[in-house]
Image (cartoon, rainbow, N blue to C red):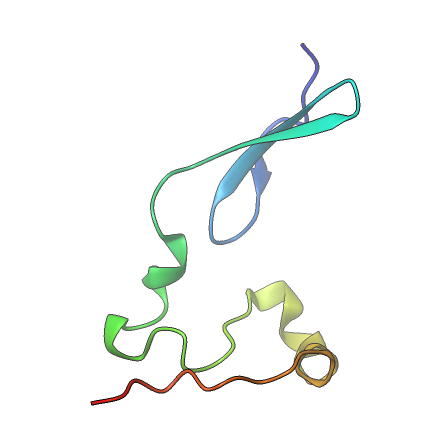
Length: 72
């Protein structure tokens, strides 16, 4: 079966294959995003992989913010 080969998605690695019109993704397990954010503040700000940092202003302008602060 043909596939994409290993694709580095920064927070995880994936392999893609297509079966008819269906795209199947097989990816690594584990929360790779927790490598660069402390658990205590996880999700309080938008985390981007390095290759998207130059587009941060545009990306943040396209999404609607929502409250991610923990309540006590």
